[in-house]
Length: 249
Image (cartoon, rainbow, N blue to C red; front, side, top):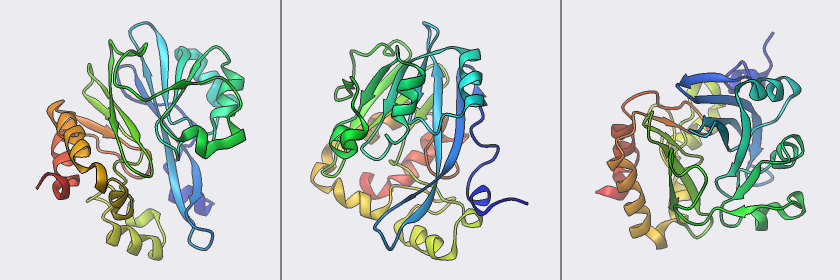
């Protein structure tokens, strides 16, 4: 019998799933996020890229089980562990404990959000170059008043990696109430996008956000891996243009 969380996520969980050469994803457990009386269930997803140097770039780490830790060691050594926005940081302490020589990179305001949960050295993720992964992965900042999200593009595979920039919840995997909210919010599969409440927090930086999205479109991504919901395996450029029609019009 499957649990309710299994229905809401993408089993098998905590397991390396190959995407294309040198890229894996890991579907993680449900988290519940939102105001106290309106918390909603979000499936989680991590992306792993093996760079040209052989090190592993870990984007938005999910729960680290012993089995997952062993599987990761078989494909390489984590060298850069990324918290891409202020919401995606929860499991960083266990990753730092497991891989103490990896560098932790925090997007703007992550430390402010995490407080004492992050009491180890970290590096700022607040610019678009000058990182160990630059030869393989482009970095772009999407600034907002609530949070700045940092997104990535793996050039060789034309894979765009985002966190909350696009959410895409499948109706069969969410409750009726969350489905209604997702539809109203503009992030219900197959028409995923940036939730309307999050859009509002980027309104003052709209020109910078538009420029960032236009840059991503110019990269011509084949696929888009996102943290919450069904990811886009093909036609990434067209999905970007569709998801941000409200911004590009």
